[in-house]
Image 1 (cartoon, rainbow, N blue to C red):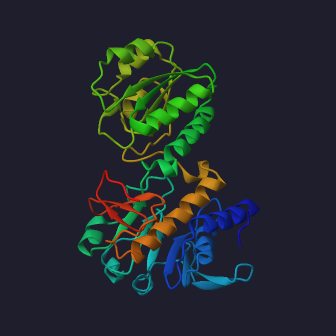
Image 2 (cartoon, one colour):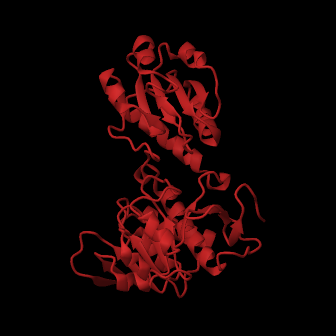
Image 3 (cartoon, rainbow, N blue to C red):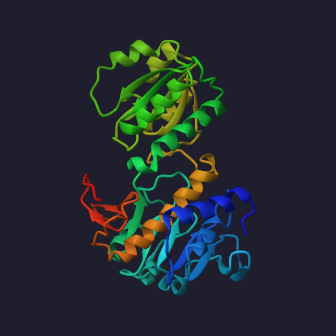
Length: 350
């Protein structure tokens, strides 16, 4: 059962809101740190036929009846070919291993992998062998973080606030430089300014003169690298928007918060510049679902199950009118999808 009463109430709230119907479908979900059984319970509340919960520390498979909810969870410590062959939905984070030829046992037309990553990088599959998945024509989908209805960048921006405090930054009247682009940059700028920070921005999608950055480096308290979606530009480094020598000369006591984008950590260490995290992932986001809070976790988990249901029930090609709750992406294809069907990237549906 769920240990946190807040999770229990929110689970029912979001099941009622998005109305996922997993009747007749078999689901594999991982345990998560915040509430180990949450994803399995959500699948059960949505009516899944068989719910398997992956626990990497489990040596012997077992079943557990949740009388409070009226369904059972099947706990497994391995992802066998036999298990894969009977699954319709895999709710995937980094724990569940999907490597090697055994993935050939996973059904093609009646199954889908829906991403639920710890770092909330829904469109960059990790711990998955992409060549095997492509060869076996297995579908992987992920929530589209650019869909404004998800308010994903607002969620990310609130996490940035928490990370600022973890770095010892008193945001009020602090001088902060944001290096990024798009809606994510706009959301973070708005939130930080609303709590009294002095905020400057550099848009990585432009070729703006770096003299602008040099002008505002003096007396900076914090630089936030938040180039997402990734443009490929180096944020801090020898070929970056900001060079280490300029930081050392103009603001030697500045701190660097890395959310996404390319930075030279070796140069930062050499310049004795404090940065977090210590070993940043430069291919995706340095965020953690733990930092999101109960409401965000439950809503995103419910939506990850809902898009899997509609992806399967739509036949992967048709559009069901009136069910465009949020957009998602087919990650081993070049199209973007609406709940209920497929549209081309950049389009919209009703």
